[in-house]
Image (cartoon, rainbow, N blue to C red; front, top):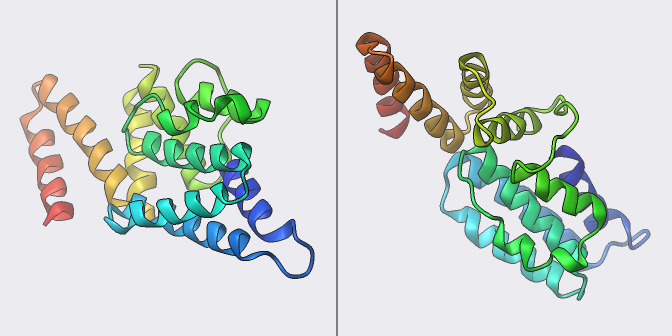
Length: 188
């Protein structure tokens, strides 16, 4: 995830020499804002993504738009919102091999080396593990801690929901109640 965002930012800020083109600056800023707003659960996320996509599409380069779509799919995976990444899939033929591999990884169809050190990369990796049912309670707790330490409401609520369900399924009403109170605190 970190690599994808870095590539998108690099493309948006470093390709035009001394003075980046407006589309590069606008798309880079909008993608960063999208990611921040999305993880915070802020409705402004969609508007920022639309700006980034429109700016990148103005170049006529499918590979750039495909990378932006992967950024969207990755933050969704971190928030346990799994789908087929339709925005990327429509652009798959114009995407590079690395982007196609990352899309397959997000879909749980390909293994990936260890996650990067940044919190989002680790949370995306845990989301993919959840998608493929290869996560244990410790991994779920790690995801809760990552989202909590970053103040990322959307993924935190999703991961706490998983913890609450597991506690209820295990018959641990006390733990489920504590998690429910935490969810209510975040939601209130």
